[in-house]
Image (cartoon, rainbow, N blue to C red; front, side, top):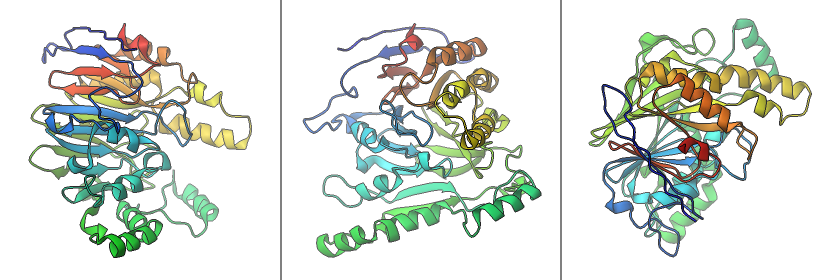
Length: 391
């Protein structure tokens, strides 16, 4: 069954945007699909659209949400931010491999990169399912030191992790192509005549501007200006450091096109840098946590105590997220990277009501396969848990 709901409202005095919300509930993603479940309209689309491929946060398998991942399409080119568990299937429901241009990783926590190898290998010279140009992969470089709260903490961490080291985006991609999938790559090159995969997949460590003086211990989240990391004929993508506690570097991204602008917060506590990056954007997708809700799912013990500190200091509670959107003067706010991500565990109604109390624009709680069209700012919602976002 499909439900269609339309709402029209003015967002801001400066923008006079009209927002039309269409809620669609069905057995699968909306848009025309062929018998294989592939979106047959992808090559016909123009404009700027956002697809929530995965809306769950954290390394917990959810029956209702894929891991966090967002696709932004501009005139038939697609850019993916993060590659959470299960998101690749939703990507393929909305886009084909020929239109993928770039993959951007906000940080290296596992729930943001689980499907990275699948995104990179699946589109590598499969007849009818192949990249049409080299895919650019951007993400954090290797930290200059082991991230820590201070020097004493740095020494404690060094003793705990022993010889383990952090890594970079380039090293992760190399490991996937040259180690994890090494046998597959060699066999397919020999048996099918495929080209060297590194010719099709090119990784880049994001270089934080030197004047910022970012440091994994003393200065993980310095006040700074957004900086450009990618540009083509359709989009400009900018990044900024956000505050994900010990996970350094962690980035938020902004994608600007002739149709408008979209910001994805990545994982972060309340961040003035994110506010700066999002200034005047059409759409802000911001992470959110229901801290009591997630803690209620954990048994008591030292492990619970440790993760509580991480969750409290690394993420944005729903009491703060609307304030980010209001201060950034964005047109619309979408809550995603929902924690907890399992059905019924997060108080989605409280998230929505609290954000609305702090933000004058439109707020919704994302579900997998929601579609947001920028310019007309038309939102097409596919979820089942967030009916209250439409009333």
